[in-house]
Amino acid sequence: MPGETMESAAGATGAVRGRHEVLLAGEGGQGMVLAGVVLAEGAVLQGLRAVQSQWVLGSAARGSLARSEVVLSDGEIAFPRVRAAGVLLALTQTALDRSLPLLAPEATVILDEDGVRELAGLGPDHRVRRLPIVRTASRLGFRRSMNMYALGVLVSETGVLDHASVERAIRKKFGAKAPPNLEAFRAGSGGGPD
Picture 1 (cartoon, one colour):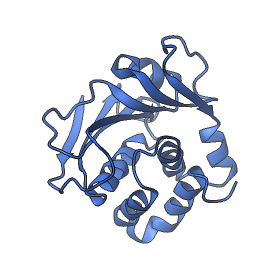
Picture 2 (picture 1 turned 60 degrees about the vertical axis):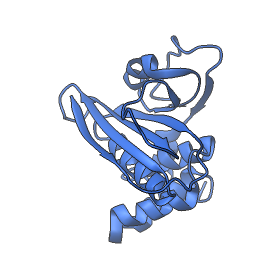
Picture 3 (picture 1 turned 45 degrees about the horizontal axis):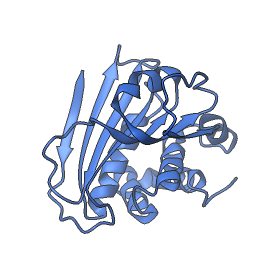
Picture 4 (picture 1 turned 90 degrees about the horizontal axis):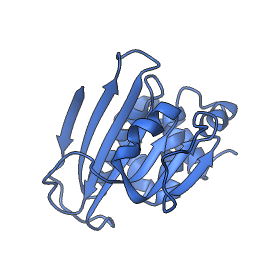
C-alpha cells in the first residue's frame, strides 16, 4: 500500500549527478521509513530534488515489511518510484527478498549480517557489504536510534550525500531530540563511538 510522496522544488546544486535510487527496508518498528524521510530531506538541504515513498507490506504493526524508496536527482524527477535502485539497505531477509526485483545489476547492497542469512538472488556484480548493523547499534546504546545508525552506515558506504546535509536534516526533523540521533548517525558513519 503506497504511502506519502513528496518532491522538493529545490535547485540542483548538490554533488549528485543524474538520478539515484535508494531503498531502505526492514521490519515495521526498525525506522527505515523515517530514515528514508531524513535521507530525502538531506538531499533537499544539499540542493537536490528528492522524492520519498513509503510502503508497508502486511499489517502496519511491528514485524511487517516496511520499505522507503528515495529518488535523488540534480534535475527534474519525472517518475517518482524506484525502478532500478543503485543502493539497498536491508535489515531482514524479507526486506532483501522483496527488494531484489527493484535492484540495478551493479547495486551496492548493505545487509545486516544477523537479519539476512540467505544471499540467493544477488548477482555477481552486486557490491555486497554484510555488517552487524542492528547488533552494533544496540551494543553502542543506540537501540532507539538504530535507524540513524544504519543511515550513517549507508551514507558512509555509498557517499550518496554529504554527511553535513544529513546531519542538518536530522537536526531539522528531530529538533530537541536530535542529539542522540546525531550521535547514532555519526557512530554509523564512523565518526562516533566504536
